[in-house]
Length: 240
Image (tube, rainbow, N blue to C red; front, side, top):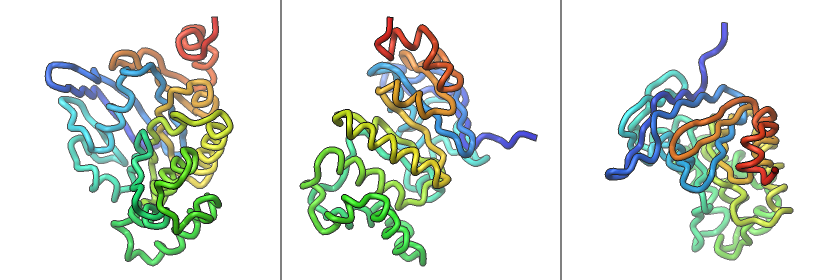
């Protein structure tokens, strides 16, 4: 018997005033997968993550996480259940130290006996952050800030980590490093839902993927199959 999906979204619709940003979207994420959402700017990818994470209230539809309906549940309650969003643009606290940013990532579990060990584990995963642990986060480079955002997410002990454009604005070498880190996080047992404009890199690590256009899912399938699909190649991979 097949286990139920870790996350199942059915008929999700999100509206901003009179504008429908997401229209009847269905997606599934199974435990242990990397699932990627690709699409152009304005396709609704970030809005979808915002609705799943509790930051945006959907107008209609269902969001079932670990067997429970969570549509409309507040974001801080979902984070306590291991549903963690690493937002677009890093959104670190630039005036706080690197260590303080990481601590805030697990603020709700700071009395947990494993908290200190998790902090040291994250610093071991990101040696550059360990070197700069006492520095203000605002002194970090773009790549280091992304590592800090990922590390802060890990401090919440994610079961499902949602990553919104983790490679945005980074140089190619740093993009490759970010994707290595995502693979490493996945190997640690974290299920990943990835929104990414770098479609080639995202599809390359995805078990399955969905293509969004103007708020709708227009294609879905295994990552490698979509990467070989002529429509995807022409629209998102720069191939003729």
